[in-house]
Image (cartoon, rainbow, N blue to C red; front, top):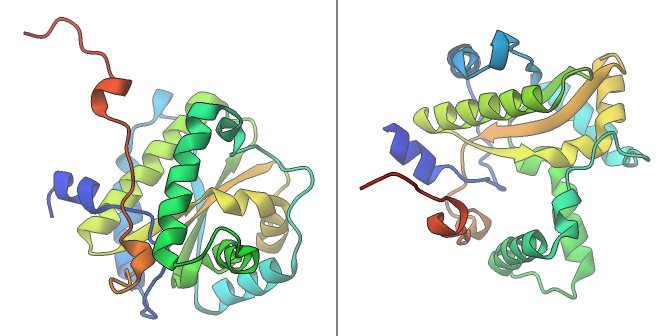
Length: 220
């Protein structure tokens, strides 16, 4: 798979096969991802990767926990602005439409949201964290590192789902993993084999037209 194919076929997968991922594959991907861009070579990213019994133990804790109050960071702030709220609503409508869950079916929607806590059945969960003193440029570096991982996973035939939702339970996760409170639990990354028969893995994702977001100057 070339880079363009990896970019085109990467999507947030929300239903995985019950099939383990070899350690050697995960180690290879993460080793290659060390060369993601990093301003000043700070390499701020850190991670804990779980599978098997350790993953199940964390999921048991999360299913019994309450979300942090207050949250350590706000990942949903853009939805307060109409332009971005519309994008959120569009992807939500497409996703729940694929699941055949009606807007009024609050119980089914709640159950699907809670599936985040078990990472949609993925056999591997990467938990991304870093020191709290890292600022916006380093958060950007972490995003580039995660994208590098996701594209490398596609090259291995694997899929993923970045889960900022895990940030809602940052303190619970840190306590379970034995991480210092000086650590920021940024997100999870569900990793596994895509269930290609699941409708939720096939709905169309709208993207803003290129020329609505990018201005070109000086080109012939």
